[in-house]
Image (cartoon, rainbow, N blue to C red):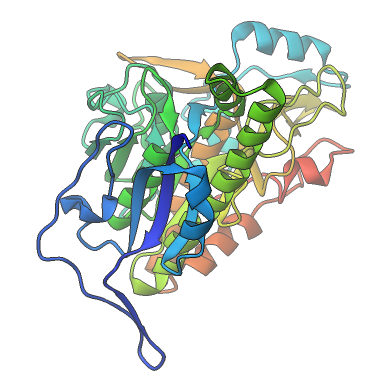
Length: 430
C-alpha cells in the first residue's frame, strides 16, 4: 500500500512521570537536527536550539494500514498527514473597493490616516496612551520572514530561523508588515506599532515561495516557545483545496480525494490543538507562552450577510487566541467600529484590520487589510499586558490570557453587531 508523509507528535522517550513529584526529563547529551525531503525523519527534539524539548515532532512515510497501530502508541500525542499551509493573504485593492462600495451603513468607511503621532489602530486599542510598551517581553512572528534591515526595526535584537530551506529574510513582505505592527519603531512623526518597547523578536520563516506545510509551522511554534517567546503571532491557514487537488492528481477519484483531504484537515486541527495545549502547559515550567492567530479572510458579508466562514485552523485550535478584523466607520458624527466583511466569524477577539499602515519590504511603509493585520495588534497588546503583569509580580499564562480577552470592549461598535462575529470585542491596552 502506498505510503504518505505524516507528522507524529510524541513524548520524548526520556519522558518520565512520578505520581508524587510530577514529570521529569532526562535529555540526550548529544543532539542533531535533520531537516530534509519527504521520507527523511525530522526530529525537532534533537535540535541544538531545542535542547530542552519535552516532545518530538517527526515526519515519516507511513502506509495508511499502519496508522491505527501508531495511534494506539501511548507515547504518541497526535498524528496527521503533512498538510500544505498558506499565508492568510491581505485583501487586494480591488477587493477593498468592492466591499467598501457595497456596505449599507448610515456612515462611511474611514480610510486610515496618519495622526500626529500614531495610526488609527494604535489609537483604537488604547496602545498610544498606555504607559506600557512591551519592554522586557519577547515576541515571536511565524510568517514569511522579515526585512531585518528595515529602518523600523533599528535597535531590535532579531533572531531569525528559517524553516523553509530558502534562507532567512523576507521575499514576500507579509511578515515584515506584521512585525512592524507589533514592534516597529516610530519615526517621521508616525508610530505604527502597538509595542515599540519590545527589544527581542524571534522570527520564524515558515512560508516560502512554494508555501508551507504543517511540519514547518509546528516546529516553529515549539522553537519559539523554547526560545522564551511570551507571545507567538501567526497568520497562516490550512490550504484544504491544494491538498484535495494534489490527492486527485495522484490518482484518487474526486470524491475520495475530498474525503481524504477532510480527514487530513480534522487530524491537523487535533495536531495543532495538542501542540498548542502542550506549549500552554509548559507555563508551569517557566515562561508562559500565548499563541495568537488570524481568523481568516474568506467571509463575504458585502455580498450577503449570511456569507460567513468560520475561523480557519490553526486559529481554531482551543489553546489559540483567534483574531477577527475591525474597520472604522463614521456614523452619527463619531467614529465607531464594525466587523470587516472579509473577517471570518467566531473569533475570540477582534482588532483593527483595515487600511493598516506598517513596514514595507525594502523600506518605507504601506497599507494592507486583513485579519493578518489584526492578529499583530492583539500580539502587541499581549506584550503590554505581559509587561504590566510582570511589573506587578502577577505574571502567568492564565492571567495573561484573561487580561487580553477580558479587557476587550464593545462600547464603540456600531449598533446591531453580531456577538459571534466580534468575540469579546475590541482588544484594549492596559
